[in-house]
Image (cartoon, rainbow, N blue to C red):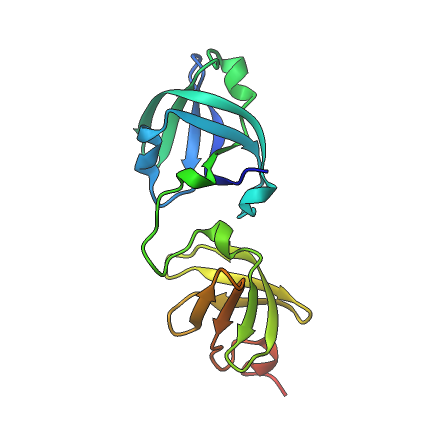
Length: 185
């Protein structure tokens, strides 16, 4: 099965000639102007592993323009409001091989979700279930036997990410776990 990368979500139709509004889910929204074809996939709001995406169809990109933070996309074969409504809720994806190369030490969310997380002392905390984007920094929601733990994705906390091993090593700050909080007995 081929891997894909979500780069946006279709929110709703725009006008009556088949354009759709796309909320970019990429740090590179200008890449939409360079696309000749996209894949439409059924995918939820979050970071699905790339292999979990099921393509609905491929579509030629006829035009792209910006509207504030959104992208207005016109796709081949989508020529009226009814057809555009049929795309609402689908994700826009590209083949994994066409992703924009990232600088060393940066990763796609899809590469992180599912990685095992352990402390520098060797304690396994669980797996990254979600990457929450915040204005200050990303936060990893790690699900494990003890429940969920929110870990700030900062250089001080995340000490190593090894994609080949499938592991993230963290140095948890004091008080991060609920049982270590200020009111713990």
